[in-house]
Structures are given as C-alpha cells and as structure tokens.
Length: 276
Image (cartoon, rainbow, N blue to C red; front, side):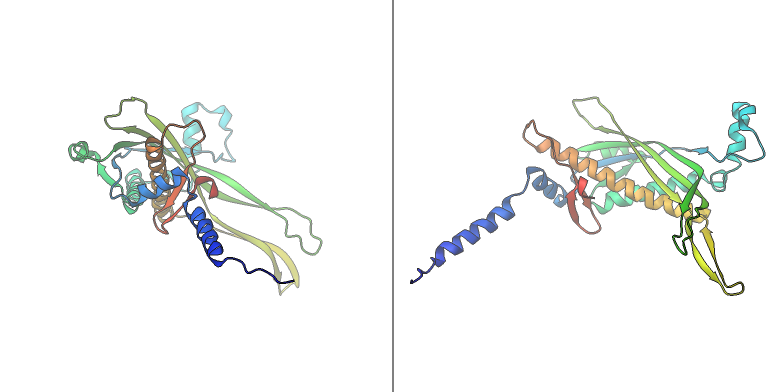
C-alpha cells in the first residue's frame, strides 16, 4: 500500500498556530504586570518613617515569679532578660530598616520621597501613594530545636535552645487624590535567630559518640544588618502590592478572581504570587 505524503504547508501552518497560541495565551494580569515593570517610575511613593521601635520580651527569668510582680515591674524584668533588645539603638535600627525598604523600591523603578520632600511628591504626575511605616516592633524570645540523631538505635531526643527575634512592621497605605478615603493597613513579620547546629560526633579520647551542639549567637551588628535585609524584603513586597493594585485599576470589570503577581527586581523574574 502506497502512503500519501503529508502536506508540508499544513504542518508548518499548524506548528505556527500552536506556537502562536502558546505565546499569546497570557492572562490579562500577566500582560499588565509586564507593562508595569517596564514603565519608568510607574508610581511615586512618599515614605514616612517611624520615630521609635517597640520592644517586647518573652524571656522569663528563672529566679523571679513574674506573676507576683506589678505589670510595669514584670515587663522590666522580662526586658532585662533580653540579650539584644535592651541594647538596640532605635535610630540605627530604623535607619538600616528604612534604607532596605527604599533600596528595594528604587531597584524596582519606584520614585521614593522622604517626608521632608512632600511638596515635590504632591507635584508628581504619576499615581502617588503615601506609605506610612506606622510601627516597628521587635520581639525577643527563646525557641528550641528538638532533634533525634537516628544513629546507633539512639532514639533519645535532644533539645537545643536559642534566641529568636520577630521583626514586625505595620504599614498604612493611601493613594493621593483618590476618590476613596479608605486606608489599607498591611502587616509583615520576619523572624531572625541564632545559627544552630547539632549532631553526633566521635570523641577519640573515650571512643564514644556524643551529641554535641553549637549556637552561633546573633550580635548587635548582625541585628542591624538583618534589619536592612528584612527592610529590603518588605520593600519588595510593598512593590508587589503597588503592582497588583495598578493591575486591578487597569483590568476591565470582571467577576472572576484576579491573579496576583510578584516581581524580583534583581533577577527580573515575574511570577504568580502563589508560585513562591
């Protein structure tokens, strides 16, 4: 039986059509997100810095029954159990944190004004937002790592205690000259901690294996440096919020859920938020 040759033009047309479908099958949200990240200064931000850092300790001293103390004395007893918070300089921490936020927004193409440049901010021709860092809070506490080496049939659990600190931040966002007076409040929390390592190690003198652990404690220098890193992460997430708000404003009215996107200004990667 003689086979009929396949029409080559039909194959080429089909392939082109398929490829065209692949590259054009892009959601409206993704197209708008790509447009937003390519705009020069798509929005302008007035960034308001906090004045103080609120500090909270959950480190309970062994020698004092906190429940028997008046509230102010109990808080003082807890505070002076902290290894880092009692020595934290608010101005240094706020400065490093805010520099991280500004750096993230700048790297993504957002024009940022400080509070003392409000007149220039008001004259901006692009959509403008006021972002007030309403509160920064540090919480210091003990945490623990429970591990079982699972070696030599050793089913004993070993506990390593270390210090952890939550860096909490609250943001108030409002759009300049918006018909709506609603103000969005956003919350973010990141945790930093001592570096902890533990495992079974051979002791040549005794010829035995013993569980040993090391804790590389956070220093004040580490805390200030991490404030900058956390500020940068927060700034990146604020950018995502502004981008998705811009997408919502430019989408035609629809009843379905809106896809959220996240942008990494360092790698240039744009992805769905839930893909992280």
